[in-house]
Length: 158
Image (cartoon, rainbow, N blue to C red):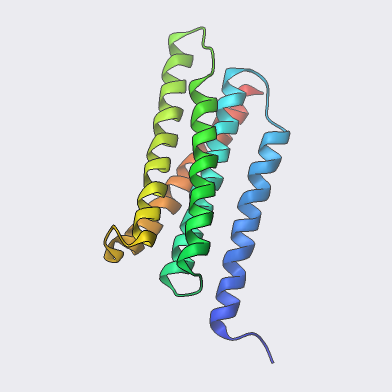
């Protein structure tokens, strides 16, 4: 006798979130030095925040999470993304290339932060619930993009 299908689905999502969190933690521990390495770490942290926010919103929309739990999770992910944005913006750069790179990462992190805030609005009932599915998909897409950016930057920093 196994778990009901909905419980199995939720358990899989929890595994995805735990994996994303672990990847972000490990990325922070093994981050290469220099501007590029620090930007890779910021991108990885924002990727984790976006993936966790997508999961929290999806669980809320599916009725598998309360508004309170979803909001607390989303609030924490706003903080995590904000820290990633601050880290990216604070990098002291020496070249135009590094300046552009810093700007690109900071902008991408800012967009993720805005979407997580939008998710909080949806959970609070001040944004249309009908936008939820698209927002989940957008957050996942941005998480994947930031993860790819982090991987590229990490490789370039080595």
